[in-house]
Image (cartoon, rainbow, N blue to C red; front, side, top):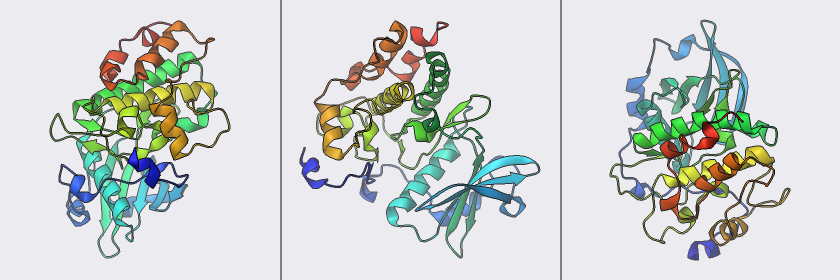
Length: 306
């Protein structure tokens, strides 16, 4: 609770843990240059930049073309601060480890050592993020999204990877209605099965109760992803963040009180019993009673035609 007194800004992004908190080693950016190509013979010089998909403090994402195939190229500037550098290194490490149809695929990592610029070539998802669908999704379509996301989470958790930032903006969609998990900048690879994952990273609006109360005892290290997933399912259906009234701007103290002291949000009465039960299984405050990704894949909401 002392952390609340230290946090006064209305900022939903929280800092990464210090370097000493890492329990796994990551390659330096220079080392990354030795692994330029992951899946085929694409080189940086062969890519044609078409337009900008997005940009931020750490760099720019471009839509690029190679031999009539479209990709997304995430280019990160060389003058990043240490936090952004660590985020990039985490993402590179996890992208190297993963190969799943439910996780955005990395096709190559390129470096310009003289300027310190690093680029990650990823598959292009032409439908944008799930954030654009808030309030415009039926239960049937949500069930289709949920199956894919849970298969991705089950795969990641099987590799001892906790995403820690599941939210609509980090789920990408394509024209085939395929949804894939992206943005591993604050994810964590658990070296030991009992490693803790209660650090204050990711987007705090989607943080689970046990991650706010990091001193509250043992918890399921993967359950935080399920809480975030459950909130996201509700948000896509309702059209607004489910822990707060529509239009209310969230701040740290309000969110912490809502998550830690309030009742978990529930699906509205007009929803199907299957969906209401599905959400309840995701949003149990006791992390040990929250269903796992594998268990949720067997829930009736994902088995029946709605």
